[in-house]
Length: 117
Length: 128
Length: 264
Image (tube, rainbow over all chains, first blue to last red; front, side, top):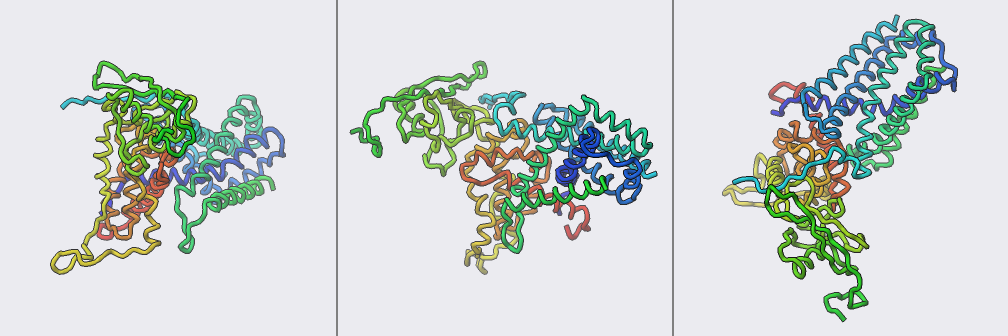
């Protein structure tokens, strides 16, 4: 009988989040952190964005990708603190990192749900 | 019997000693900016949901020097993440199609095609 | 003509290189230091040749491990100018004009001079059961005598051959920052060897190895730095083996959650 462990599941989320952030973040950051604020491209109207956000499919997709990217970041940062900075407070770091991801995911749920209108 | 060996301590700066270690740590630090951009995008969504005034305030805030500076650094890090993630995938997964191993350049190119498709779709969706 | 120098044109050596070698006698009060030795720079000499010259001609008290001097026994691993290398496969004149630093293999406790204590690896390797495990002994005859061979196609051999090239030289452990920082981590070679047996068509022990490697100090400690693969002299690619093992372990873990007891 194979043992059941949580860490492999977290790793799968980390892995999925890695692919997701690699694929989705470049365009999202380019448009919303540079092109639109700096006026390189005319920003879309608030109305248009609200129409996109109002779609339940958008809600699900964005909730999914934000959550998995947060788990990816949390998992990777946790190990960076262990190895890079050699901070050895195991459970405190895990709590801070994964806890932060949970808080972020909850915030994402609330913000996306509210923006659905 | 007592331990008659000498254990050499590892310096906190071990990752500065070799270029590959340095790139590795930079790659891992990209996680910080992945987290930051999720927060940034959530702030955008919240602003949009609150109406046009809030949305435009957000764009103005995003235009400010400090935010631009952070985002430029962050963007560099997430591009590093994308490039390194795509680069290691062939090593991490021994993909086989019809019994033959898929060559590494094909795996890497395939991911960039995926990136192009996602980019094109989102660009279109947002700017149409 | 100097007979010991067959293959090179000149018989005499005009150049020398300084080898800066770590010295330490077991004494907790004195940290390791270095000693400089001037060694002739012969074109085809390796660092190991230099060390043997030191021991034969200059200082017989120097302690170091070596055996085959041809990159197959895995005994002569040391850190040369900070890089984990097989000293029998590292040429002195690549470091000209020198000095070239020769230190004990990184991430292992020093036993004496250039000799390291490999007990930790010796304890970890058997944990992954690096041998063919079978539920049955398919080739035993009625009288329990060996009665045949396991058959394996070239394709089945290719599936694991790369990982079977490991000579247990420990260069990967010296290169791995995770192993250096977390003594519990089971390490690259052990996991690569587990994968070698898992992929061997004759083996049926994948589950037993998974039970060991699915723990925190198994594969999950690895953060895919990849340095182990870069330093491996036999092109085993332990980093690749570990990442594939993680995926396999994760898939088995999902099955363990989803399937009822009997089927896991």
